[in-house]
Image 1 (spheres, one colour):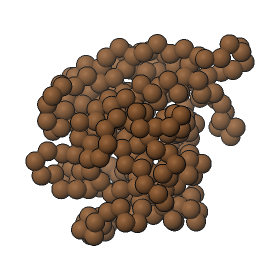
Image 2 (spheres, helix red, strand yellow):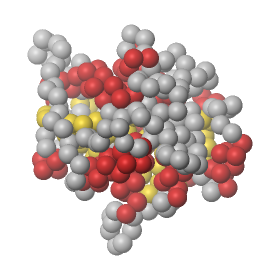
Image 3 (cartoon, helix red, strand yellow):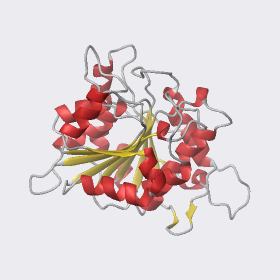
Image 4 (tube, one colour):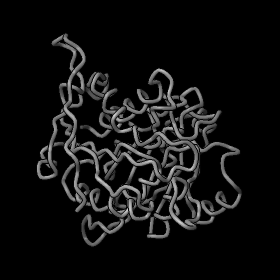
Length: 311
């Protein structure tokens, strides 16, 4: 098993004793202690496969810093109250993306084997394959292990792997390994090729555009979950570039995206599905951000997932 590096120390930023922040809540923990918590954070600081702009390797640390000062209370769900940090996945430097994915998957498989909800902090989108693929051969009862993914993303990320995987190929890799269902929510017009669109449609995967999210965000995420059919497990992925271009701290920001409020609500709805077996936020690139706007949105996306999942 690949090692998990020691997690950072979590500290609150408020001196007000009533201000319950994630900095008060989150414990550092080991893999052996993971099942004592409802959810665990795992950093995956790799951006060696990004197609566009690098910087996502700094995402896990920045999201943690933002989350430390975030309040733990959700008005409807109440406070988040059971969360640990297992630290970052260690992986071999200066290796091919395929080798790195294999090393990351060794660690994420061990996390998935614990009775807790894993929350992965990326990292570029190539890490999605390593984070989710262990679920494809996981026995969740009576020999069943079917997997569906809800991907909140501006792009379809189903490119053919040619020499080495990229941040644009994780769902083609998962498909080739036996992925049962996929729904992409927030996809943008003029951001994908006809060939990749046809690949998604020909395999009965679902696409819900950013425009359709704008029409009705709850209906959009419900449609995505319905498209997964009766799969046994659901993995939820957020590529932060699903947000509109005013959130510049991602590998590939473009106009026409969804709002943070729409993303938060849809993530909470998706998180409430009893089949959810894992969650991630990827492609947050702090060096490309302005005033931590995108980093803060990514951190709050994590908080909304935890609230929706009943953590």
